[in-house]
Image 1 (tube, helix red, strand yellow):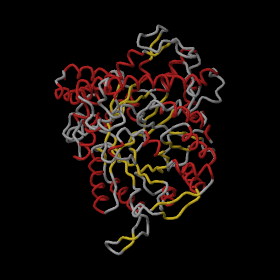
Image 2: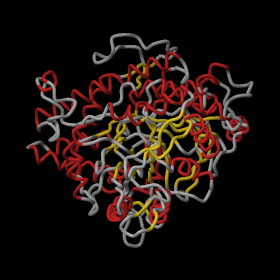
Image 3: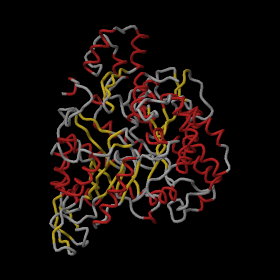
Image 4: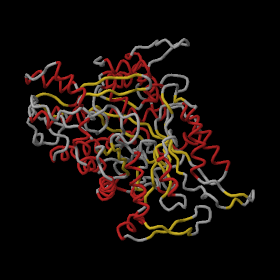
Length: 587
């Protein structure tokens, strides 16, 4: 196995089995075998060959070609057996619902999952509570309770709990919600996002007011000028990175099962919109390992040369197609192999059978192909690669539907059409998602998700472990091109980027572009291109330099809406503690 030192450190810290004394009792090979065996056991349900698929799943994971989400790697084959990363729980306007969801969230967080909530149904602060004659404390007060509970829960003993808190833009408490994380001590275990409607965006463009709605009564509760609210969102996002935006009407236009209800929330990183009580298991193909030397065109490819690539490398489209088919089968098996912490979640997940196959190593793929991240060639290739993945994933889901049956809630779904039914239907209500793949990419030794390189060299912290990284392709390039020296590497490690180093050739500096060297427009463009070919949503950070203005944040938000993204998160460097490394180039 080609595991890096950092990969081994992460695996020992978080993933490998331990005895009662805390000693690691499992090798990485044994971990992948454990996971492959547990997931492939689901093949028996459908008369399949578990041994055959266990071998195929193991080979893909051990070769770092495909990895499932973290809970699967940690929990598969263990007593807990909870394999899903993404959950959404309902929070309705009564004490029973509020605290039932908190209890359920505790079980999910303990098992390694992340939980999303919409607090939009809760009556606003100071509203009447007829049952007691008192007044309501509002959504933010209950979020604080959830935050405190999360603080004491370790996810599977391996990571701190993660939540997404969402409030609709027309809730009367929206301004309190927007401003809450300007206080550094507030809601540390929550990402927060505003559920933004098309009606609000229309009012924003017209510079007009929009109505607020009391969720208890459904009545108008006043109005606010859209621009004033948007400015407050921008101010908070500029200062802290929160809130993000989710474009809820766009999300629901893509809701595959509208007959079951509306989507109101996402998982903590925003890439997985889900109905109440839904879950999703994610997995990612390592694109960096689907690049091969030579220009011979594979038979499964797109029938043309790699666009504008000066490299002698090509994408192995046959391998990519194989990994997509394998990944879809793995994730569908994982739904049946999963041990669900809550029966309502099991019913919903097995009813819709949502899976989220995505990618990691995108920036590395581009480097191997000699394509700059923020270039027209890169945007074109992004569409080509993701449309290829989406098509093959749908085909794989159709083949599984023929073998195993369509997902139980298929009737009444957006796929309940003669043209789809005639082909065999679909096994899964969704098949593709772009996740952040933070620690998974460390294990795989590749760049994360569809993000650009954060820096050529930097330090990062995983739990209590500090990891030092320098990009291996840069080292390889520097040695091949003859400008490598230990002193150069040391200086780059201090600076992070390659700008300002005269000894590094211009074409190399352009190829190893980092997140803070990329414009807002290009960050959003890359997200939008991937979103166009993704069933669910795309997790991507729009990185801004420390000197970025509030207008830069506002422009990013507007661009994301105009270009068809389902949500957006911005992060201005240095706007909250814990940034990865000091980079003097981003001031």
